[in-house]
Length: 103
Image 1 (cartoon, rainbow, N blue to C red):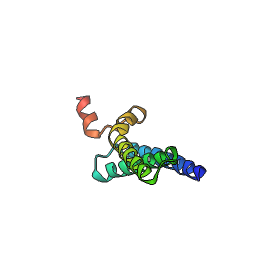
Image 2 (cartoon, rainbow, N blue to C red; image 1 turned 90 degrees about the vertical axis):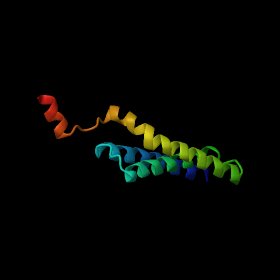
Image 3 (tube, one colour; image 1 turned 120 degrees about the horizontal axis):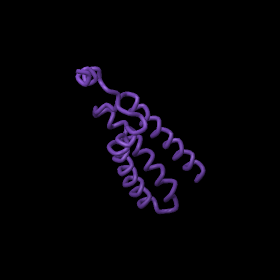
């Protein structure tokens, strides 16, 4: 069972990376749909990581840890990590801003 939770956690990390890169390549949209996708991918990663790390605890404590770490990782993925991604994949400039800089 522990191996399955590890595999699920590693797959969820892959989902977080894919969603973050997708968000960056789309120009960091600020829509609710984009933020929700970022949050849900982070929540999945945090909850599955808590499931792997704290699998020996009782069901009630495990559920609480999964919820807490899922919410924290979801907030991090939706609001903090995209700012850090801009150093690796810069925001695309619009044509109007480059035209105004030339004159």
